[in-house]
Length: 158
Image 1 (cartoon, one colour):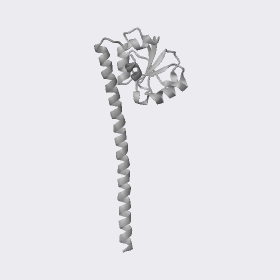
Image 2 (cartoon, helix red, strand yellow; image 1 turned 90 degrees about the vertical axis):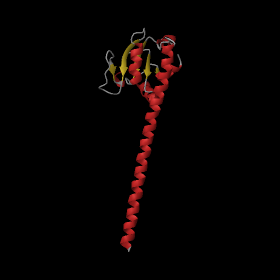
Image 3 (cartoon, rainbow, N blue to C red; image 1 turned 180 degrees about the vertical axis):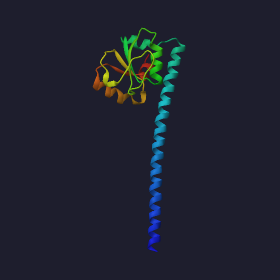
Image 4 (cartoon, one colour; image 1 turned 120 degrees about the vertical axis):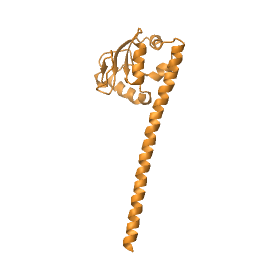
């Protein structure tokens, strides 16, 4: 009888522990999916505003000119970073280099460095991963005194 009760308690404990672990895994997956969804929403909203400027023939170059920025670095050579490079490469704004954590990152026509290798001065660094802008800006501010702006700020303040 005691063995049966002990087996039942063990079975219940195992099932409860398994359910708890599965619940934690599900919450982590949901949180991960929410972060990914937030990233796509941010990119979508930025791209919509960017397209409105394009339709009105307003260049992103305007943001930099208004603030006296003539040379920039682009942090994050993903979707938004590569689009920013393509949009500005034929403008009067000099894109001196890109910055990316991926040591194998490359983009045609753009020198890409790691954050810790920032030496060449630019007027401003534009950070394209908007959801982690604060963390990136904090890390960059420990490396350099160059002003740092988010692409989101750039897009909404033209």
